[in-house]
Structures are given as C-alpha cells and as structure tokens.
Image (cartoon, rainbow, N blue to C red; front, side):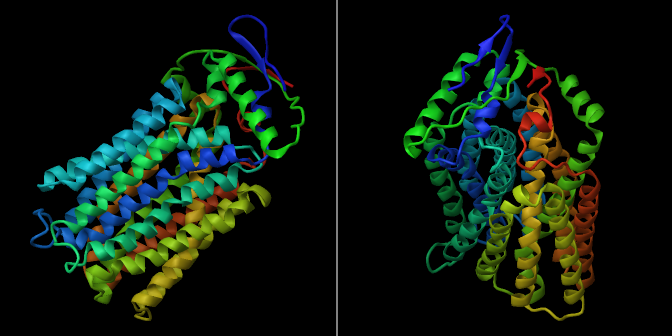
Length: 486
C-alpha cells in the first residue's frame, strides 16, 4: 500500500489519484454505479411519464384543470428551469461541502417533490412541484457526475459515465410501458392512473436512497479539503477489499501529487479558471449542451404529441412507441461507450453529434414528403437517437473531466444550466406549438433546427474536443491546489 507523506500542515503529497486510477473493475465499483447511476432511471421514468400521460391529464375527469400544451410546454419548461436552478445552487454546495452530502440531499428533494406532484389538485400545484422536482434532479447531475468521475478508474471512466447517463432511457422504457396500464380506464380511473405512476417513482427512489448511503465521499475532494487521513483510510479499505476479492496484490502506484489544502474556493476564481484559462474547453461545453438540450427537451419529449397529432395514435398507446425510441437511446451509450475510451473522445463525440444530426435531417425530409407512418417514424427516431444519446451523454462526461477538480461540480452545473436553459426552457415553449399545430411544415422546421444544432456542436468538437481517454483527471486539468506532480 502507498501511504501519504506530508510536509507542513496545509500541504500533502499523495498517490491517491494514481491509486484510484490503477484499480481493476470490482464489486466496489458496481456499488458506486448502482448507488449513484440508477437515479437517472428515475429521471427517465419521471420525464417520460409526464410526456406519455400529458393527453390524459388534460382530459376532463383527470382531477386537474390543465391543457395538453400546458403540460408539455409550461410544466416542461418549469421542470427544466428548476433543473437549471438546482444545478447551479447544489453544484456550488457540492464543491464546497462534498459529493456525498449533496447526492443524499438532492435525492431527498427529488423524492419529496415527486410525491407531491402525485397529489396535485390544481394546475399551479402541478407546476410548482414540477419545478421543485427539476430542482432536485439538477442538483443530482452536478453531485453525481462529479462523484462518479472521481471514483471510477480512468480506463473505464468514459464508458461508465456514458452508460450511467444513458440509463436515463431504461427509466424512459419503464415509464412508457407503465403509462399503458396507467392510462387504461378499465384498470384505473382517469383521476388515479397518472398519479400512481409518479408514486411508483417515489418507491423506487427510496430503494436507491438505501443503497446510496453506502457510497463514500470522493477521496480526491477529501484531499483538498483537509481530510487527507480519512481519504487515505478509505482508499486503503477499498484496495484491501479488491485484493481479497481478486486474490491478487495490486501493483504499486508511483505517480505523486503535492497539493495545498484549502477550504472554500470563491466563485470568481472558478469562473476565471473556466473562461480565462480554458476558453476552448468552455466553448466546447456550451456547444455540446445546447445541441443536445434542444434535440431532447424541445423535440423528443414531445414525441407523444407528434404521434397523436400527425398519425392519430390513441393517447393510451403512445407509450409503446416511446418505449422503442427509449430503447434505442439506451443502446447507443451501451454499445458505443467503450469506443470513447479506445477510439478516443474527439472522433466519437464529433461523430455521434454529426451523424445524429444528418439522420434527423433525413427523417425531416421523409416526414415532410409524407413517406412515414407512426411505425416508420418511430424507427427513424430510434436510429437518430441511438447516436444522439451517446453524444448527449458525452456532454456530461466532457465538462466533468476537462476542468480542475475544485471547479468540477460547478462546471457541470454551469454548462448544464446554460445549455439546458437555451434548449430546454425556450425549446418546449417554441416547439410545443410547432409540433402540436397539425401543420407538417411546422414539425419539419422543428426537426431541422434540432438537427442543425447537433451538427454544429459536432463540428465544434472536431476542433476543440480534448483527448481525455484513459488519462487521469489530474493530468487532463491539474487541480488549482496542486503544487507539484511526479
């Protein structure tokens, strides 16, 4: 085992980052994935349920006086606005107080707001708790992605991050299929089925919370914030468990790093670091988030409305179609994720963004020419989103690994908030009208805008993407607290 050796009180020389990166995949890493990553399944369940049941909630007898456009437009925009606010608020707290505290708090906020959504009795109540649900999930993005990248070995970081972010779509599949019996008035009355779908999300979230209690704090964060001894003990325990499980002794980690321990880092210093020291990387983060946010928040989550409006699909059957495109979304990161670690970040990020945009342009052309029905439209979207989902997941991976550790959660939060505000707040408000107007040309325009932004983001990645594959986080972007490395 490698022990930390310390010089003066506020300075520590450590091999902990190298020790974490050289670990083989183990049951301990699976615990991290299950405890942290499975919350995206809940997010997917949540958002998909709202899209799938929007038509039913808007019907007479649902228990809410609300329109379809308000559910898919106003409520969706408020959910995303909450997510942006939550990312910024909780992201700052995550960098200041640690990953573990915040990923417990944000899940609790998410669960409470979802439970209260299930008992909505007026439109304003529904809108309020959609906003608060978004607040919790926005905080999750910052806390979870920073913790995952700091705990997963560099050789696996790309594929694990993509698959975890892509697991959102497992929840989307579940939400789509769940909406079918929930919308069946022979099973549940109109005013009950949609409420039970939200309640189920709360139950699943409580199970995840039980697992998450065992996920440790990030040793990297502990090192910088004056808890080097605790970080050392944690990594010692992890190494001992892995050696027992594998019956092999781990190789020595020799790469050392000396850091000056510090407390809170001012927001001004974070902003100066990101935009003055890493302008190319900041441009990349903006482009990737804006492109994927428009595609998903503005168009994809209105897919149920498109099926009903243009193809006369019954509202109770849209879940089957959405389950298909959700499966395509998950298969993208699952099957393509490993190539982000082997072929590299630049070709895979640029390739997935550009190819998904070109395929969406083709889909828009076929739709505009009247050559698609509900089934073929769904298959086209499935192909588009196979590549787009891998690209969108790589946006979170990118901004979480290309900036210094002290700014990681806040960087994720900032780019998520800015990109999602541009694509996720304005998008639903703009595209809800385009995709629900019943005019084919309006929907084609919506598709082309989303496709154009994806292609543009891919071209930015061609120039600015960072070759971060299989590299230590400290090598990609040295911590602000670093004194020396060897």
